[in-house]
Image (tube, rainbow, N blue to C red; front, side, top):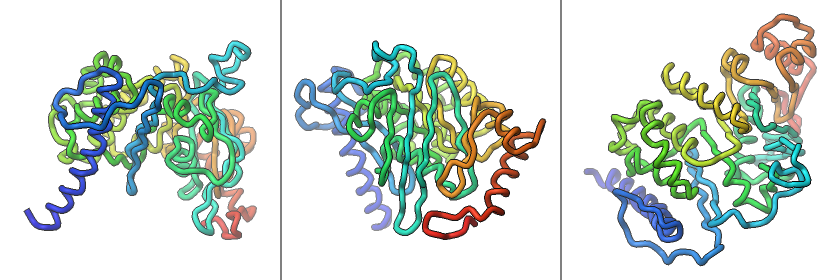
Length: 345
């Protein structure tokens, strides 16, 4: 092994060991086992303490929420579906006046959107429109410059742990821990959320459904890009999320895997979950989504059902792709610019 390779392995071993110690802390706190993973751990948190579990990657995201020991960390804000005073409220995700800049470029510029329980909303837009930045702000990987994000009635800024417990995020570029096996990685995710019962119930189904069964004892480092994407999908479905954020989830996945993922998203919608999907596959969005939001230059350009967008574009009986091209081209021709004055490419 070369010095550079050995150094890289040692660095990743240290990183994984840190998060496996977190897993062992969860074992002590929750009383669940973790087969195949053994190491010394820090003392377990005291009763009622939150267990911070934010895992982020520079090139991609391996997202596990900050999970509280118990669901007692504050009451939902007004509008939460569980709030007795608001039983008829069904909004599971609400984003208001969201802003996010990177140096002199404003990636998200005053965006507001909502997703109801029991619907799939497509988040569409040209490259650089701000879709991925929006999703990363919603799940807490990026901190917004301004704006409010409410998940299931919990304010992400002030009730972060409770909000994140409801979120599952499928990133465009997964960054899994490569020295864990496939099965260990899914189990690790379940233990972070305290949902080992879901893991035990669904692990075999998920492994088979996403064709990971033959790889369950293989190190993640040996997986192809498509298999790593399937692993990220399986991890998203192993806890009791109510809001699913999907950033180009079908990229790199084979046709059968795409079919299984779309079927699962439809099942989750029918069970009352809220799903926000960013995609460039407009034909898929047309068939899968109940409503779509079109972004351009960090702003919301259009929103509605396909029929509503057709009416806005004055294109009856057109496909979503045709409507999308008309609306974005009109915005370009009208001189839509970024907030710093840079014209849209």
